Amino acid sequence: MAKNSSIEWTKHTANLWHGCTKVHEGCDNCYAAALSRRWGNDVWGNDKPRKQIMSVWTELLKFQKEANVAGEMHRVFVGSMMDIFEKPMPLRDHNGKTLDHTTGDLRQQFFDNISNGLYPNLMFLLLIKCPSNINKYIPEAWKETPPTNVMLGPSLVNQSTANNLIAHLQEVKGKKFLSVEPQLDEVSLLPWLHSKSLDWVIQGGESGPRKRQFNTDWARKLMAECHATNTPYFFKQIDKVKEIPEELMAREFYR
Ligand code: SF4
Image 1 (cartoon, helix red, strand yellow):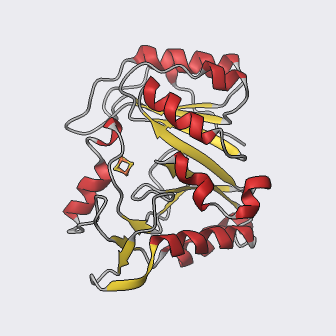
Image 2 (cartoon, rainbow, N blue to C red; image 1 turned 30 degrees about the vertical axis):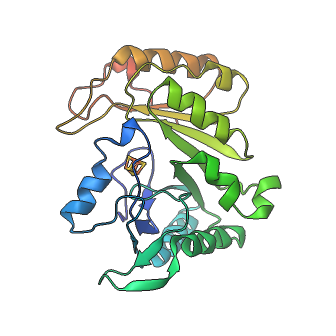
Image 3 (cartoon, rainbow, N blue to C red; image 1 turned 180 degrees about the horizontal axis):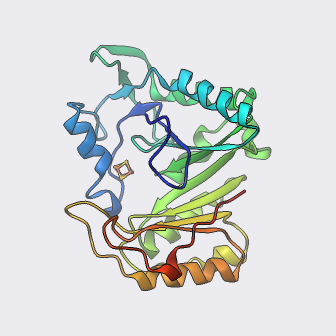
């Protein structure tokens, strides 16, 4: 986990565990799976135990303390190496020893900490791969009164993943963002932007040696839709190599 994230739209990243399962075509070139393999961790797939990240709890308290001292809210992106809403999975520690609790227990502890007000200066951006699981795993109280410092955001890659994932996202209350990345085809979000169902949109193309083509007209379209509906819009990258045209340098944040 990084102290200061290199991801421009967040200050920090946090992962309770490492490991995930590929869910749609956006996952084909998953950098997190490749990174895990490079680190010697066999944690990807439906039948693979995840690896617990012990340091995350002290890191979160440190982030909270820093934000409090600065008198600011700091964004924490949760889930660059995991899916916070996946079904409970077995866990191993960093030595490979099987643990007697699951990822479901870690999720519960994290949500309890938020509910108990441990992190009042942190805005958590929960990157969601399976929005259909949100209502299954959030605390009962959040269904009526969601915490003000949590944003829920699925990652989608084309119109069919948008239609499918946003439909599930609409079944829950609370602040919501979308990570349209790695975008693989044109997407329109107008119906949901008009109905004010989305608080923030982040968009970007794929990077890396196997990157798939990104069309900058997709960014022009989404930026225009966001601006027409007064929705903050953040354009992250074309492919991390090509320079972003000036008219697409929109770096707006939800506040
Ligand atoms: S959901 Fe994200 S982290 Fe999980 S496999 Fe897909 S791209 Fe990788």
